[in-house]
Image 1 (cartoon, rainbow, N blue to C red):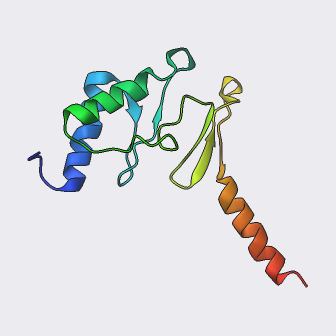
Image 2 (cartoon, one colour; image 1 turned 135 degrees about the vertical axis):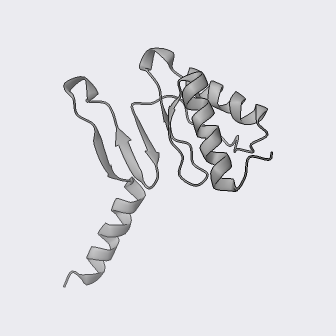
Length: 111
């Protein structure tokens, strides 16, 4: 695929997905977190995977990387929680594994 450097290719893939397929996604290195309407469930994920496949972009098919639609999800080291978006509230917090890690560090220093 001759679209330039890796970052430039990621930008082109992101732009194609956004403009041609109305995907609501972003990319950070090799992560492409995306959002979809609840009524559409996994349609956007399937569209994104087909697009990436057509463009020759390799991506993981492991179950832990291909999670089904959910009101909350982990990406980029945090948990995004959209369960209260109907009241105009979106929560972003550290992933559970990070919370446990911080707690264990605090316990080490607690006299």
